Structure formats: C-alpha cells, structure tokens
Image (tube, protein in one colour):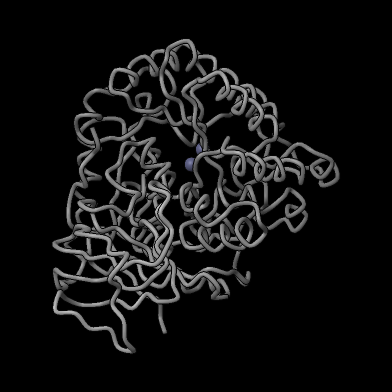
Length: 448
Ligand SMILES: [Zn+2]
Ligand SMILES: [Zn+2]
C-alpha cells in the first residue's frame, strides 16, 4: 500500500487547475522514459504524458489550460529528501516545518521526511499528528519519522504501532544510535510487522566518544579528538546482521566510510533487506576542510578521507547506495560561531543538494542524469512507500523543472531556511531549479 499524499498546502496560492508542462526533456527513471514530452496536469494529478503530438510554435497555445514552456529544460519527478531535520517543536528559531518546506521547494524538493529528534522528540501518536497538522501549511509534502525509543533514550521502545497508524513512514532515533542490540532487534521485529524501514544512525558511542572530526592524520595534526571509521562500520555490520536475522528492512543513513559501503555491498549480494543513503557533503568534502576550523564542516558522521569519498562515489555508481539525502540540520549562528569542539554537529542541505549532485556527480561522469534522479525520487519513494517519485498518469503532479547547464553561485544570505550554517556559500554550481510544482501548483519559481 502506498501512503496517499496527506493534504494540499493551504499556503499555496490558488492557481488554475489545468496545466501543460510543454516540450521539456522528461526523465522518469522508474519507467526508463527519457525524451521530449508534454505533461498534462489536471486537478493536481498527471492526466497524460503526450510524446507524439507536442505543442509547437514560437508561443505555445492550448485550450487545455495554462502552459509552462519547458523547452530546453529537464522535467523530472519532484525530488524527495528522506533525511531532514526540521526544528519544530522546540527550536523554531532555527527552522520550522513551514520554513523548512520553503527551503525544500527552493531546492527542487516536493517531499521531505522529517527526523524525530525535536524537543520533545516525536515519540508518540500525538506528536506525529502535530507534525502532520503543521504540515498542512507547508509548501511541499512532509512525512514524519517516528522515534524508535521513548524520548530517544535508546532504552524503551516507543509506541511504533500508534505512530504508524498516525502516519509515521519510518522509525529512527537519528541524531543518536540505538546502542542496545536487544532494543534494536525488537524495533526491527515491530517495524517488520508494518513493513516500515528502520532508519539507522550508525555510531558506536564507545568509539566516537567526544570526537569532533574524522580520526585521521589530519585530526592528529590538528590535535582534535577523532571519530574512527570503525565507530560507524561496527553498527552497520550489527544492524545488517540484525536485519538478516529478523527479516526487517534497515536503511543506513548518511554512509560516510569505504568500509560501510563494502559491508552494504556484500549484504545486498546476500539479499539482506538493506538500503542506504549518502549526503552531498560526504561525497563532496574531506576532512582536510577541518584545517580551517570552520564549524560549518562539523557534522556527524564526520567528513572522511579522499579514499572514503571515492568509495562513496563508487557505491553510488554501482547501486550499493540507493539514495541521496541531505541530513539538513539547521543550527543558529550563535550556536555555530563558537570554538570547533564546542559547536553542534550538522549543516544545511536542502538548497544546495541538487547543485552538488549535478556539479560533483553528473558533470564528473559518476552518475547519469537518470541514475542521479532515481536516487532523489523513485528510490526513496519505494523504500518509504510514498505515492511519489514518478511521472505517470494518475500520480500526483509533483514535478521539478531544471535548467541543467545554468551556473549559479550559492548565496547563503538568500536561503529560505531560517539558519545559515552551510559551508557552500560562494560555491559555483551547475544545475538550477527553475520551477517546483507540488500537486499541479507552482510553489517555487526561480528569479529571472
Ligand atoms: Zn544521523
Ligand atoms: Zn540526521
């Protein structure tokens, strides 16, 4: 069963019901279609995909309805980010469900999944309902994840069934690992009953301790406490074994090391139900950046070595890594502008994700457009069973239109997010979001 899209956002201004997205190069990785097409949208849904009788002429005209001229552009399923921290409830000064959704649509995303490590954490039915209620005001679809354990303390299982009924699409204690193997085993057994994945933040706290960066030559040089690759890999290994044992689905969040990629690759060969994601910062940056002591390079898991980055790219290429997700983690400037070891972990991601995918993966020949878009659309949709991620008749008209060759410079001061903690300010990127369309409504249009 696919989860139906829950609502139409009230904040989206009224727009005509009928729309044609005309003449773009449509890429739909789910069906393998790639070519010119006119997409007809009616009442928020894709009515048909016309590939033969395309609208022509200098000025496109049709009695069907309004037209977006997408000639020379890419038209792809609305992008999905399955790893986003919205700070509501608790830190609305850093991000709210609405502000996060505004940042999302500016980044071409039409669906985001929010992590439960809010204050208080999303560990019960009422809290899931609260998010979904707030999400009615959002610019895009917002799907909450429920906590695995009560208060995310890692001890007692939360009411997974209740949260599932309320609309949670996965369970995770992200931000923290579930250190108890016993608790993780039970969580997997429950999640299996609902056929919902466990999203796994892999970190052995005994090994990561007070580490603030990758444990490497660089950390030794800088005299900063390190987090070894093994802190991640031990947990990846444990939870692959538990997934194999319980038959549950486990999704490894923010894979950062070569060893993790190898473990996941081997598990997939044995048909263990494991999937994985990588963040744009982990496939772009290395721990060399920490030499600047800029706290916008501080995140968990930490930025690793060049060899790890290469392994992540290889994992993306050979399909070991299914998804690209941002781990968008807003923090206030007051919190981030402190000594490196005092600063919180995490950086923004929503508004630079597509640009980094195009610049670092597509332009460099690691992934084709279709492979990259699959990892940002149909793959996360399948894992979470979202009714999204494909361009197909009858589906919600969630569509992103991209100018593939456009270059742009990241201006952090113009971000829609309430926070500013991005290391990518001033970076030149290719691939610009031109329109973001949610249920047939234009929710974002790039400035001319
Ligand atoms: Zn995490
Ligand atoms: Zn996270």
